[in-house]
Image (tube, rainbow, N blue to C red; front, side, top):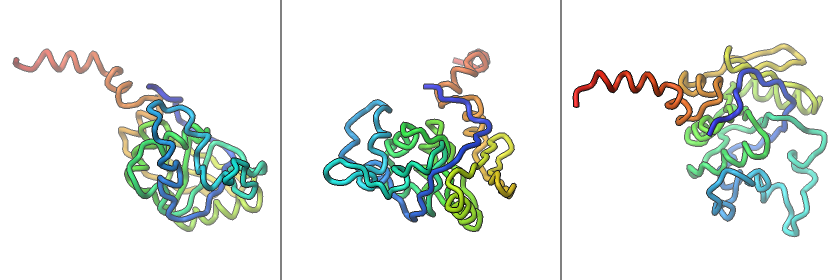
Length: 198
C-alpha cells in the first residue's frame, strides 16, 4: 500500500528519554494477533501508558497533554529485541511519521522505512540537545528535511545531517512501498524482459 509522501516534516515532538526500548515494550506480544495494520496505535506502549484497570498513566509522555506532534524522540537503542513488524505499525498508527534516536536496532529501522515512518539517527550530543529543548518548551518544533537529509531545532537553528539508504529515501519521497516502486517501473521491467532470451 502507498503511504503519504515524506519531504519536509516540521512538528513538535513527544520525548521518551528511555534507553533500550524494545519491541515488546512498543507493542506487547498479546496484541499481535491482528494481521491488518490497523488499531495498533491504541496499544502503543500499552503497559507504560495504562494502569491495570485500563486508566491512563498521566505521567507517561504520550498521555501528557503538553506534548503533541508527529515526531517521537526516543533514547539510545530504540526498537531492539524481536523483529516484529507490528512495532513499526503501532508507531505509524498512533500518528508518528518520524522517530529520532541516537541509535536504532537495524530490523526496527528497516520496518519503519517499509511503512512510511522515517527513523532519523543523530549523535548522542544532538539527541540530548533535542531532549533539553523539549523539556524547556514542550511545543518546540523540529524540522526534518528528507530531501536534504537534515534535522533542525527551529528555536536554535542547530542542525545535523542524517544517513538513509538511497532506495528507501526515494520511496519515502514518493510515498511508495516496495510494491508501489515495482509498479512504477513496470514498463521498464517489461522492456528489459523483452531483451532476455527464453
